[in-house]
Amino acid sequence: MKWGAILGISLIVGLLIAMEWNSLCRSSWKTRVAYAVLVLAGWFIAILLVHNPDLPGMTQVLEVIYKPITTFLKIN
Amino acid sequence: MQEKQYITAAQMGMMIFPVMVATADLLVPATTARQAQQDMWMSPMVASLVGFLTVYLVFQLHKLFPDESIIQFSGKIVGTFLGKLCGLLILFDFLYCNGNIIRQYGEFIVGSFLLETPVLVVVSSIVFLCAITVRAGVEVLARTAQVFVPIVVVLYAALLLLMIPFMKIDNLFPMLEHGVIPVLRGAYTPQGWFSEVILFSFVLPFSANEEKGMRTGMVTVGMGMLALTSINLSTLLVLGEEVPYMTYPFYSAIQMISYADFFENIDSIVIATWVTGAFIKISIFYFALALGTAQWLRLEDYRPIVLPLGLLLVVFSFWVAPNLSQLATNIQTIIGIQMTGYFTLIPLCLWIIAHLRKKKRIDPPKTMTSPPAKE
Image (cartoon, rainbow over all chains, first blue to last red; front, side, top):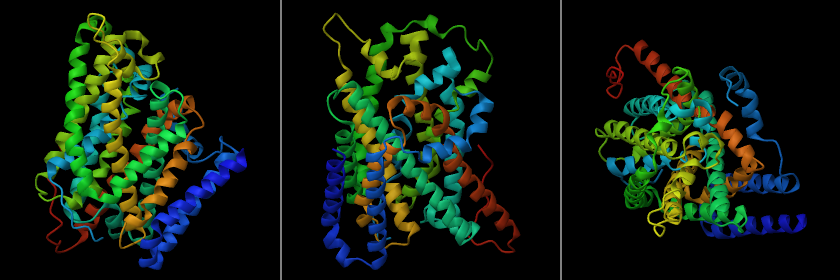
């Protein structure tokens, strides 16, 4: 089941690349690198999330940063 | 950027208005009510001060650096490295916030209307729709807002009028039972929604008549404040003490509308209008994210990176919270304050530093005019 999800995500990533292929061929190397990095980041995080839906992320970082304010104001 | 598109000041206001209002009527009234109880309707007024401040800062910075967004001019104020860092923080927060918004959208649609559909399908379809809109450019976005926002406003106003017979004025009292502190604590979450007017910084360079801009920004924030106040007030008047225990109080309040046993179940209309508002909100965040990323990396065009950013948005919408209750907790505790932290404090610091640097100069350039007194 998980392999199916990973296959589906990879298929969508492939579709995204195929949709932009023509304009990517015409654009500069910077755009191509940016495109590759963004697609790979999305693909990687998506697969991590399939394995573990409770993956800690930005939310947990922000919780730690703003803990003093939320406890001071007693928001909860 | 090769953008030669122009939008008017009124279109700009209509683009930003749903940004404040569209998702603030879902989970936020309940979180406000948990802090402020029967004084929840005053909290948006306090929260809007943040919005007025942000608009003022964004427009003052725009006067110093016309034709540039905050991503571009932050480097000129605090140097390349810190400027890039500011830009990265703002862009990452756009990604994070938009993930939250899309997740709220998906959970609301699935929880109230499309009960059997997976959230992934709802989320992916709206992101794909927004990607097409963003690729079409800012002018298309502005015209979309111009068509949809008046409809949304009129229908919401009609709903508020229809709710009047079900309101009980007793729910308002006792007013300010525990002083003003609960009101201020209730403003803790909605202030973040007013900070989102930093998006003006991304659409202002496309504005055709800039002298009207500041007034438009202030009017937009004022309208947003009025809308949120009336939403909170009507929810409170209809539901009373039950508001803090509900997930979507405004939606529940609308479901109470029933005339002569046949004019009821108008929530389908509500969802249709609400989806248009959320669509514009997600699109504008998405547009700012794509344009800002392209400016941050100095790409010649933002269109090629729209689709991969969409993939990231879908991923982030699932990453922000594993379930709806966690999402609601996040919104109550951190989302509001972190949006203010990124979208108001960074422009405030930039503005202060720009002014200090301006004072040191012997002959300030023409674009650096002295600002009028604060509002």
